[in-house]
Image 1 (spheres, rainbow, N blue to C red):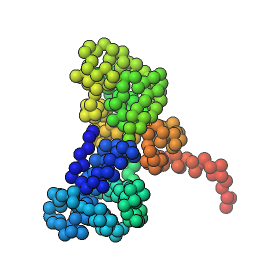
Image 2 (tube, rainbow, N blue to C red):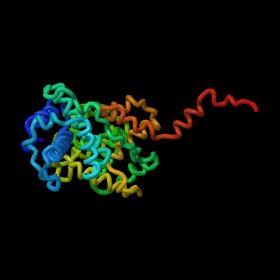
Image 3 (tube, rainbow, N blue to C red):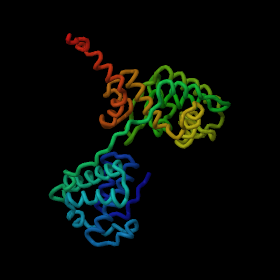
Length: 324
């Protein structure tokens, strides 16, 4: 994906290219940073140069200078956060991303290119995000979902897709990107966020589902994308949209709410089942899911009250009761 940042000042373009090439951030993250910084520069124009706020979304920012950027202090950054919350209805999650973006940008100016003498964003706090527990299918619902795969066409393919999602906790992009040669014995190599490669181990259910699908796939004539593991009707690599559609289809068939569950919810399901029933260590779960930060994985540790209750019950002192 090629980026065109030509409506931004040079220093901001250099920062975005640095994030893309040196920091190896994904195209999606850098695109979000592009929009975040453009919004921030427009805010600078309104505050420092009395630009017309009613035309906020059209304000050009190419003329914002390094002196304008230097003139920003911590209170300006907080007033920007208040502005996007109040005037632009940014959620806590979106504001947190903007904080991360501004912190990275000012750190770059301060430590990498040394254009500023102090870093105003160093003390900028991120808004508190209320951590909602991720939605996931319970064990019996998961079994019903796998049993719901039926029909005349693509049954082996669709079943293998669901089995991989629910056993390995793959991201949608990772599943779609699997190549035939990504699979060696009981290992699968996927390309995760930020182009990071990781190894996923395949259990018996996954190996069997893939073998059954490969037997069907080998009968197909005129495959246009022979590298791709999962193929569409047109015999090219299956698209994320098609996978989303088929997941919803089987969720409905299993009598579940298709609006509530998506491929990403199946990733949550895999993680929850591993944590709850497999008693997988949190660090191992982090590896399996390909999370960069352990805090992302920790959402799964909040899930099971029964485990907490049992942990206290199983304390060896639990039966020492004082006689009254």
